[in-house]
Image (cartoon, rainbow, N blue to C red; front, top):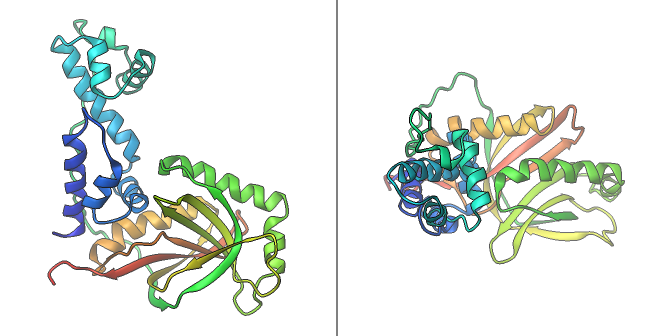
Length: 285
């Protein structure tokens, strides 16, 4: 089973549990990756966040149930909405009409079918990368909690960078940076039993009093160079990695979050590297 089939198996699990509690960690296990990586891959490959896909599927089924004669309050509970107001809001966001209008003759409703992943490797533009085995290392810096809904982090993390730039934190980190290993890290540490955190950190060359430490385990990384306005340039490169490079690379994700390494953290013209933790694909072994 290759990793696209694993993603489809994860979607199958979600489909089987739309009217019950969906354990997204179990879906990620079916995809053979962490919840963090599963959400990122799903969003980049499908073009919509995982949470939005689930909402659309639930509301598609809910509309069919209401048309079929089920009571609206029963349908709301069936798909996990304890509040009629929340269900009405979700239904209207998908269909553009209230649930009570669904049975009216001529009402236009939307149907979103189950998603099936299929990858077509285009390779229109070249991608430069290198595979590097790095020993374990330690960084120092500051952290901020992350949301388990990855879509929210697309705004949470840039705000954290803005805060650290404006309050002088990044300037202080640059002041203790190892002169032989210059650069600022952006690291997402997403461990279910420890909580999700995003770190802004550096290799320390001086006193690190007042900062947190983070140990990065030994890993093999696929390293990609990038530049441009942050965070758009980073997200664009990550999408290409998922949809163009990874499917035909012979590698698959290893169990550690991605790492961003900024040679120049200027948000208007960042120069950066993206480190993807990888291992040789188990397919066809």
